[in-house]
Length: 206
Image (tube, rainbow, N blue to C red; front, side):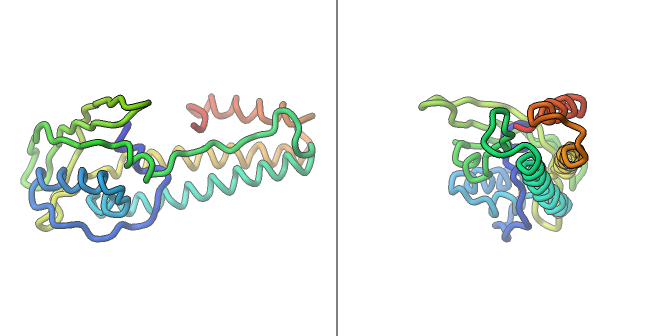
């Protein structure tokens, strides 16, 4: 699920209306066309209503993380000065348009209908890698029928992203508070504390 879920970050507001996707086959065609056109909003419009709501929540969490990163940087600069070795750098997150530009195609390999309104889609994504090379990956993703249209259902995945962003924001805020209270002797010790906390929380920003 790496490539399709990566497209959800950074997260933005609700998408524009999509062409009606009255079958899973049309849904995948719309996703592939939106990716080909670099149409971020069109791509997200093929997500379920609940997924789009979850994406809006994740957008707020992403903004909160960005602010927490800036606040930590400000605290470090205030207490330890700027331009010294060990200065923290905010992680650079690839924007959705760039990720979409790497998607060469999305193919529907199979459909497993669970109920008349629920299905699992086996998708093959082909992406551009380094140079002119391409890589392929297969994922099985849930889809739901809303009215007459099929939509990808990625609510749980998106909520997991929101939880991750909230945890990271809390860690940055915690270290910033420590810096301002004099808990660290220098910038490097503060950044080591942040790295240790991130490992304990399940990974670093990347």
